[in-house]
Amino acid sequence: MKKRIYILCAMFCLIAMHASADTENSADTTVLKRRISLGVQIGTDIGGAIPVPLSNIPDKFNPYPQLSVSLGARITIPLKDRKWALGTEITYKKIGLDADARVENQKFEGTDQGVKKTQYYSGTAKMHMSFTMLEIPVYAKYAFTSGGSHRLVFGAFGAYYLDNEFHVSATKGYVGNEPDQFENSVMPESPIDMNFDSSLGSWDAGVLVGYEKNMFSRLNLGIRVMMGFKDIFTNDNKYFDYKMLNMRGTITVSYNLIDLRTRSKK
Image 1 (tube, rainbow, N blue to C red):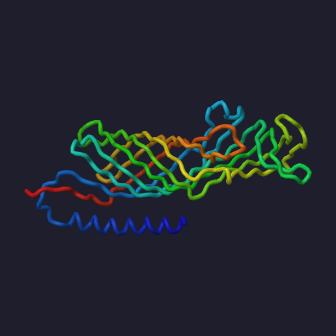
Image 2: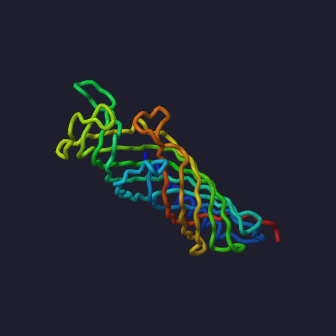
């Protein structure tokens, strides 16, 4: 799946560059009114899912964000007032986070005398979560001056998860059939692996706010904060008593390949 997406994006870039060259070499016999830009974009995200309310974050929690390159395409439509523009994108990205933590009464599906049942673990643990997705933001841009290079960006986004993971490895502590109950000890040489993939949802939606700077005529640099509003877990999840929402900071670099112009005759 990932290979096909990269091939399609590469084909888009080649076609777009050819079209852009043809447009720039053609005779300009009209007056430019406004310009619609089609471009490509790369970037990276720092973040992951956090518990809500925040009081559910363990006291001992050391996160390690995993950086991955995102790749996508975007379109920008300027409005008549040159301070405003609309934009949308489609981006393939992966958000990952590892962490060391101390958890209390983490529910999981264990076994007691060969019978599967919900058990509780307390102690140290290693966590891993990742979300591979197609993300589609829709936003407005506001330039502080007419046609200016400094822009405020705000809008909403939707995301469809192509693959997601949430694993916890219990490394040192104890397991019980009830909260705070001791049945068996857990040691580093025999950790317990908890897989919560089946409890994860398939999509997300939320809001974004950020800033974009036009570096050169076609090159743009942007930063954003994106916050999902949908719990990463399904409604029938039975292992977590609180929500977890995806939050991340995003850095983007985009290049306008094609300028589609709305013109009127001289």
